[in-house]
Image 1 (tube, rainbow, N blue to C red):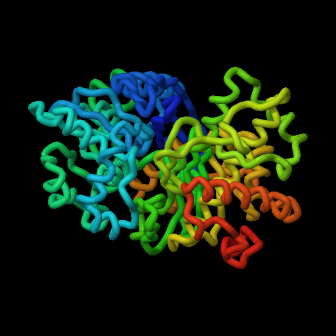
Image 2: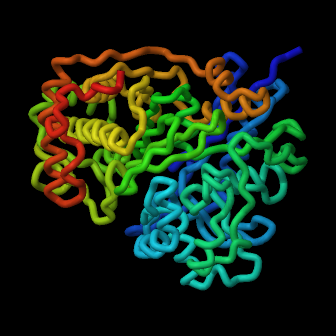
Image 3: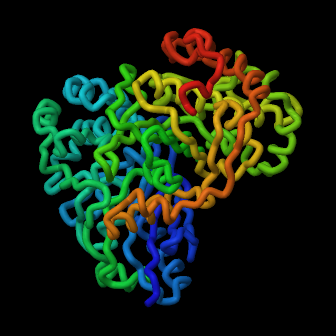
Length: 503
């Protein structure tokens, strides 16, 4: 009997990816389709109809490549905090407001104050680009008064199309909409203070729950077998964590794509007074998945160097001494979410704006890459301060993990060994979740499906040379009032080894 394959679908910022793996983690087929968005100031939208159309196209190609092989189950991940309004039948009524759309930023204070006690118990503060302030923006625009209005998360759109009718949301995607992860319910008292009707919100189940089965229409459109189980997924950051095999307490995954996301595992719920750290519930073992998503990342490279050959930039950057570069905060646009919360933050290079300087673009490219590595190191400092266990293994995933030079730079900056999974895709994490949900053991599924292709070792001498530049960036962030002075400085803590406590 032919063993089934497990399918993961990842709705990212730039594309939708579909991946089918066998029960040993071998890739059977992989496909992708592009996604396009619209940006204007603080606004970032996508057309929800394209989420399903592009996913269906990718799945159709994937199914053709499987040649009739059985499918055990599939799960979908999407960007965290991306929401829209639909009608009762799931038909979109608004554009999808993306994870970094901050048009509702002024309403974050109202959302925070209404649920302050609950948010404190959950260990976070409501942030400007989260989904609950967006719901308040629709309230003030009068959109919630329209008959039958419903809120849906990005993943819900695709899962509903697969099943053939609206489905429950999952508690991972619902976190930024204010779902109470401790009581497993929508907080009625908070919603009442915010003048929100609970009927607007979807039923919520835990990740790994069965949402339904692939219906006849979706089977005809995608080629997937009719009746294939559709499993409730998680956000893309959590999906990448599962795909990296970072499932043990103290283990971490750093996803460097358009943005930088860190996710780890903790036995206890961490708490960050500044609200930059927040925690999902693990779909196994009663554990927590703390972390955060920065607005910085490889998106700064695409913004500053459109059409430039990344290999050529990397070759040039490899000849630059990172310790001699000016402090760089590689933020495109305005507003930071992690490792600090600063709605008015702006990118900078040295004493000026973030822009390409001088005759050799590779120097600016190197400064951006070093700046991202600095932010990553700062993020681990913040996580440790919040009470998260940061003593386990670290994995790198995301599109930028394909750059060996950047990987080693980040490894040296952290001063700890780093694992590079063979298949660094959030879609693999959803395949792990699908397999684990059906077989009843998610960590065991990760052990079978996740392969490590290489482990990097840090160069202690280079780590020491990089530390003053890290401290200079921290000082620059503190000087602008974005970062509290109690964080980020190893010397202030009596620590000179950035890997201390992370072994």
